Image (cartoon, one colour):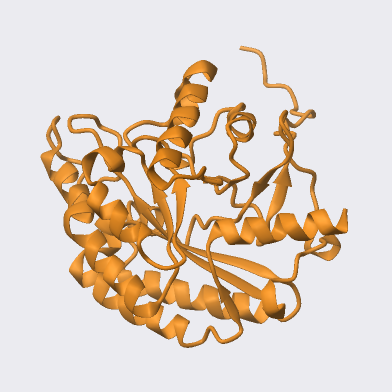
Length: 302
């Protein structure tokens, strides 16, 4: 067996160039605020009998009633209590939705979109499938169809996209821009919006959290809700401090079948109240507003 060769030529995504915090030109948020905060609620629907999906138990039977029903609790129960909490705290939600939600439980999507300041964001058709595994033609069709369905639902195009499971092919940014999306939440490489190069013009990357996110943190890593809420508050405190020097974007990513469980919602409720009480100098917004403001500032500079 031959020995492996030294990997001198490191593959690159060719989407953005390296830039450190010392050389970044950052937009100032409205009214001179340093921290932009958004809270995302992922509304997802899963196919019965397929294995893809977050799992409470790895030892379920083939049809996986246990995990399917646990996830469905979020759409039937948890999502409604969370919508009430967002309404109580006047949080404008970033509603990241599978288009399958329109078919399965449109009442839930209606409830979330009725909240003042809400933004609808594309999230594939179902989280039972990873779009990065599709052919280019099928991925194009998926993205185009989702844009069409969401546009029909809200009577205007959607600007943002988050791939199910953050699943991308090499073509995904090009296909998103080609289908009218102006920003993506797939990349978590910075604390500010960054332009990604595509064959159809720039696609803005708005930071989306991979650790202040209940799926990877609580499921499957087993972090307690107390620790997760502590992480949210620590992230918020540190980013507020950093924002005194450089504008920042902080996101919180939630799923109703996880944080909508009563014992978790009990702790999340207090954490969100604590944060909102400290937001007098924070821009509470949505990813679309962050993207629009960033693009507007960039265009004025250009």
